Image (cartoon, rainbow over the protein chains, first blue to last red):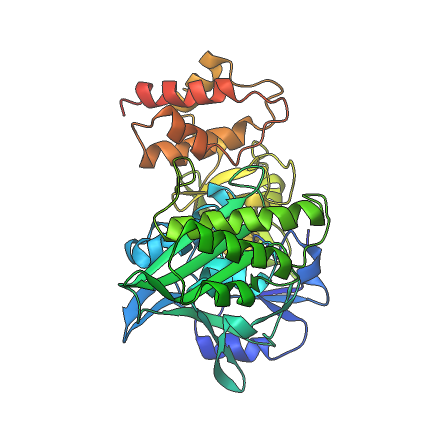
Length: 291
Length: 156
């Protein structure tokens, strides 16, 4: 039994926000990280469940795709609009987050709030230029995921809840994407993962994002590799060069899943395979596949 | 520690349970004499504690009992009807799809949720559906055969 003195399940956002303003309280949604990882329970005496706040939605509005904080990985993975966005990289990364039982409970926003460098969905969200809408007692603020993560398990979130995530749809028709995860199995925690988006016009990459997971204290945008991609044509040669740069940008550690050296090497492999997908150059066996 | 009351439906029966705020759903099941659902890893990694919550298979070890307020819960005890095993249970028995048997309830509950959505699964789909269920006797071939047999028996 966990040392939790009180469980709150507010029906109104304002109520949840004022509950969270006090020390010793934290947000629970799916609970699949919170309840099994002691790091999240340090100093926590009470939990505030946000699942009855009506935040289980995915909707499109004014050029943005909004994903409410109560939306499970299962819903994200199966949603047609998410599947259509940049070759479905976000849906695909949600589809390999844990087991089916976990995906039925775990939320996308929870994967962001947990702020683990090895998480499956942050690279895709970063590649899509997503933002988190945080609500606290002081009001609401929008934080780009680029500046959300601080370190392993740490983010800029303070006594706040994530109300929703939002993704700009401005380049929806032109954005291509790739996602590649290296793990012992699809269900396991990533050893390395990579997500990319490329905006290709007239055979030239005019904007690129390449984001690596499990290779730094935070989900890492490899900005030098992104620069090397921009202005180039989407060819194998361009991708190999970018992957080589990405390999130098990562800052991996050794742990029970892989050595730092292996992670660095695999960073290049994951990057190039994600990039090939985005350009439609993935050879047989490297295309996206999930039963 | 203060106790709270939750109301929910368990295996078709409306119940009111006194629980602790820090109790997991799995602990609450055990406290209420429903011990068919097993604690194995306790960290959400093995799906051994699988139950059906509002039609979806979930791990009862990493959810608070308090979060089950108002839920419709099905556990392995609720499958057999009038002393007759559920076709999934029959199929697991027929195929010998259990060695030590500890992970079996989790496999069966995952199968229950899966077959409701995929009544005509391919073997590949079955393998993907069971990928999160860990059997440390490493008996994975027979559970897959059992799920395919159950699908056929249930008329798919």
